[in-house]
Length: 442
Image: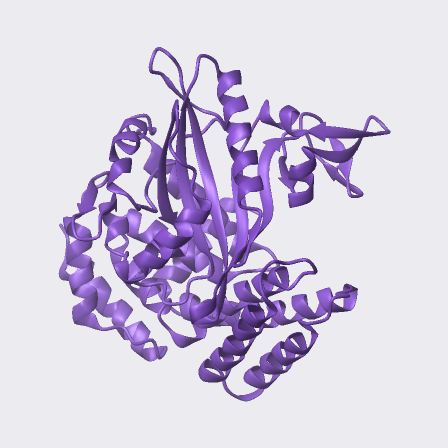
């Protein structure tokens, strides 16, 4: 028989007490309302918001705020693939972008798109996918407010050497814009110089992703904007086959258009019955990796732990981690991501204006001053000012790269220390982390 001490309310009371002791502002009544909403959600249920026109898993929708929806839809027009003959698509927000109600300071603008290709054979579907991605990359390679950085497409058919590094058979292939234009990459295989063509890569697409850096001049902001693709082949008999061998679940996606419901519904029927358990296992393996070995990253671990907790009924712990994302120090998570984005936007030949890059630099410095104090503030501001001075230099050398990495490392260290302190000070979460690390082994 359960005792009062076993109830969610009693668990939450302990979490609230820990939060207040650690200086985390966790409102008990608000947390109880969230717990009630979570309890009302049913596993696997999809809900549609008639006001905003978005839909997704009920648990995910509880964390979505449509205040930024117009901006995300605008970015979506850059990254999305359109429906066409034999091609059906469904574009969604994912990651921190899909949790805008709690992720006050998201790192990137992450999108996820389901692409279903109807074709006679798998080979034909792969060829169509290759054509779609290359056409998209060439069409949206650069503009006044965006620049394509990289495309992930295809898997190495054999072990090769590229840029002096070994790439194992089956590993994902990263393509630069110049390589996409050329339709081939230079590799060394079997001891001789050779090329790997886009057509060869299409035979085994693997996981596919496109990454841009984008500017928002009115806001003085930059962002890394990506689109992760989940591509399926629909055969003439109606069977559905994921081209990368795995149909992704839908537990962290907010779909942007009601018109996507038919294709989403069709594909969702083919998601494994064990998808939730498999998804949680994947997240827990990532948590164990981020907290188990150097360099540790408790910020990334916290983002995944939140999803584990809310999907497995550990709602009091989820409510606590949820509140951590709203703490001022977590703004530095965004700062770390934007340092890299600024570096990409300022590279020679970039179509993004230097004024946009400098505006973002100024905003970062102001953000750091606002949330930090003492030696931490002085060191990070010093590094950011040095970066600002070097942004206009066209001859960015190894010293510049070292400065970028030093600034990012310092910011990530502060974020890491914050999440480590706040997570391990809660007994229930500390026990969970210890169990994960024991299961993961040495």
